[in-house]
Amino acid sequence: MSQTITEAAFRQRCRDFLDANATGTNLEEPDPRGSKLLDEHRQFQAKLAEAGLAGLTYDRAYGGGGYDPEYEKMWREEYAKYPDMTSSLTISHGMCTPMMNEYGTDEQKAKYLPDMITGKTVWCQMFSEPGAGSDVASLQMKADLDGDEWTLNGQKVWTTLAHVSEYGLVIARTDVTQPKHGGISMFIVKMDSPGIEIRPITQINGGTHFNEVFFSDLRLPKDALVGPLNEGWRLATAMLMYERVAIGTGSASGIKTPNYNFLAKRATQNGRSNDPVIRQQLMRLYSQEATKSLVSMQTRNALESGKTPGPGGSLSKLHGAVIASMTRTIIPSVAGPVTAAWEQDSGDEVYSHSVLSSFMANIAGGTDEIQKNIIGDRVLGLPREPSVDKGVPFQDLRTGTQV
Image (cartoon, rainbow, N blue to C red; front, side, top):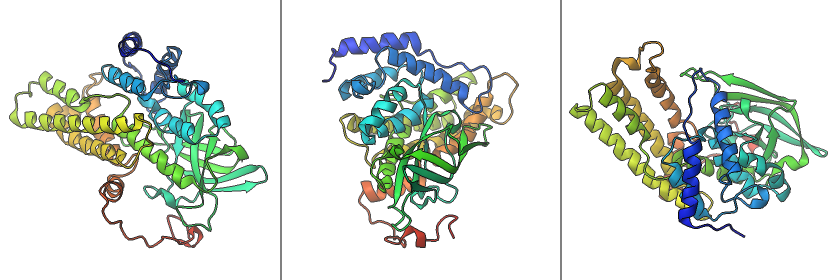
């Protein structure tokens, strides 16, 4: 049975909690691996759970709040007025947790969901491979059943926060005789297990929160399988939909213009807010961010009404990438020379880091080209691109690094 509380009382409860705890993050030391920021966000999530405001729509039997979706919407609307304290948990909470809730067995949900909701455990997603980037279905990592255990061998790449995650969801090929979109299954992996090696990837902005993950004869219990055997592509597609909603809409609701706010403040500080060209650039950025917020609100409303995310999530994801590209071109005009060279301890390195980090938006969570194909095919109903490997057993394909 769902919990009930008046809207006014619930919103006040949210505001009281946020006033006391959503104070923003203040990292004084470099954090290239993202571990310090994650620790702060975990602490916030633990307090959120203690206040009964975490996992609002999940079943109380699994550590959730047991509220109707309308309460989640109210929380997001209130949260939008405060600093975001959960961005490091986007994958764990926006993708892995809803997947476990939707596709996990009762035993899996009872075992994992409570700690996922509180942030006691953080989860990562392992899909991409060196020979299967945007074409995830070309993955070559194998999982072989040996008695009552699975043996996994292969490599994943671009795995965000794998080095600080306790668990991960991974997809591997379990039947090479099926076409590439078949014969794939999803598994729960404990990240400190023997047989797993995690190596950092150094990014252009100096960060290292992406990783390569190597699997060498990793042994998993038979019940580590999530969902039906060989239906991992269906689960992976659902998880990608959750991912695009999580990345594209964020953790709060309402009209959000963070890039505009960031650059408009700088333009005012350095006396360029009256420059007509910069004013035009900033207003175009504001318009794009406001429009994206409206689309994101519509996407979230569908999700919170109990519907599994559909391909429409790609609209927000692609729009976010467009905004990132626009922001990248505006920053040098607004910030000036400090974009390239700054005084030590001035804090101006944020502009260079923002430019360099913006390129990630066009790749992470699926490239712009993939999003356009999804929108054209599954949203607009345009004809699909020709496929030469349809119905061909994966073992007969020359794909990625397979020979």
